[in-house]
Length: 357
Image 1 (cartoon, one colour):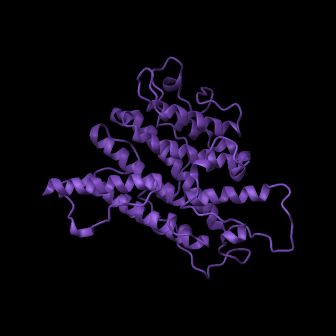
Image 2: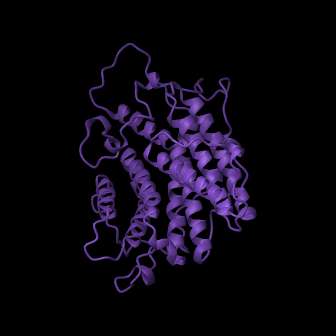
Image 3: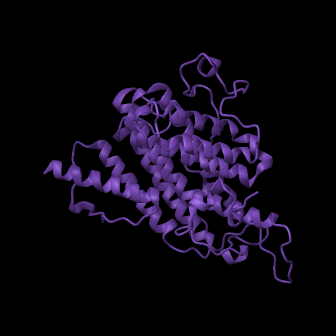
C-alpha cells in the first residue's frame, strides 16, 4: 500500500509540475486526505505541497481573465505568503534551508531541486506583472500614437513596480542558488531539468534589459553567471544535440540587442574569480562565495518576516495621484496571460506585436 501511495503522489507532483511549466490543464485531481501521504517520504511530501501551490497559481493567476490588476496582485501575494510559510518549515521538515549553502551528496541534490522549484513557482506567479510592464512601456514609447481627447492612461500604482521587482529578484536568487549548487555538488550537474530553472531566470532578466535598456548594466553580471551555469550543465558528449546551446545563443542575442559587445566570458569583470574563470581553469562553474546580486526581499530569506509593503490591498487603499488600481482598458491592452503566446513574446526574431525596444 505504501508503494502505491508513493507512486500516486509522485505521479501527481510530476504531472502538476509539467502542466505548470508548459501551461496545460491538470488531468489528475488532488484527492486531499483520501489518499494518505507515505509516512517516510519527507521529500515527496514537500514536493507535493509545492505542487499544490503551483495549482493555486494556475487557478488564480493564469486561468482567470483579469480585467483589473489588483485582484491578481492580491492573489499573487497570497501565494507568496504561502510559499514563505513553506520555506520556513523546511529546516524542520527536511533539515536544510531553501536559500544558502548547498549540502553535498543526495541531500544537497534534493535541496537544490526543492529550492529551484520553490523559486520557479514564485517567479511564474509574478512574471505576468513584468510582461505587462513591458507592454506598458512600449506603448509609452511608440511613435505616432494618436492623441485624442480621451483620458490618458494613468501611471501604474507603486505596488506594480514592487511586483515586477519580486519577479526579478526571484530570477537572481534562482541563478545564485544554482551557481552555489553546481560549485559544491557534483550530482546537480547531471540533471537536465536544472536547465529549465536557469534559462527561465535568464529570460526574465533579459526581458528586463529590453524593457529598460538604459539600466542594462545592473543585471549583466547575473545573466552572465546564469549562462555559465547552463554551460556547466551541458553533457560532455561529442556531437551532443541538446537544446541548451540554442537557448544560450538565444539569450545572448537578446542581451546583445541592448549591449552589443556582451560576452559570456568577461575575465575583466569585478565579479570574476580568475582561479575559476581563467582560461587555464577546467571549471566554468560560478564561485558562489562572490555575491553577484543584492537580493533583500523577504522571499529570498525564509527567516525574514514578510514586509508590510507587500500586504494585500483593498479598493479603498489610496496612492499618490488618487488611484489604487488600473485595468487593461486603461492601458489599451486586450490580452490574456493564460492564452498569450510566450514563444512569440520571447522570440529573438522581429515581432512587431511584442517589440519592446
